[in-house]
Image (cartoon, rainbow, N blue to C red; front, side, top):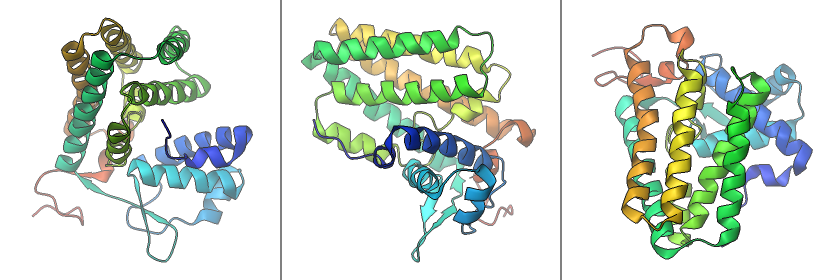
Length: 262
């Protein structure tokens, strides 16, 4: 099945690694409020700040726009978006629904042994990362990359261009990317525990697909998305924004776009 070309595919292996690192760092800057919402992002300033070339920076900006954190401006460039709490909640729910459908179709239709083997290998690599008592920056980058790979493989398992296209659209919604709330998880006291629970759900859904248990596979992926929903609720209820990045981009219900309560 032919998939859309990722911005990272155009920069080579070394450039792709730099682009992923730039993407994670830019996401952290956005979620921490270091890049104000609504203002045009100065590409050259980002290049100087992160110490990488313009090519991986541009790839990172494109990926964050696809993820929904940035919006493309009419005259070129990007600006940081803001979202309502309902926008984020609905986007996460929709992603869980579509991924649940993909898992069910994969279980009902069967999956090529090659894809199953690749998924098992991916999860074994995640296990190795999570075997550490704490995640440093390198391990966290590795987890994000592998987590995204597994979710992509899950989409491929459905064997449906329609599902693949819909998932491509869904993950562009605000914070709906499978890695969209990983930063929140990494900065919470229960960080590693949450990632271990998510990894167990990965293994459970893969087992359900192998056993051709469509309804169970679908239910697991819907539940999987609820980890992000729980993170969102906890973040919105917290007043410690320095340790809950992302909250400052989300307007609570009844709060207008300018951030002032009605």
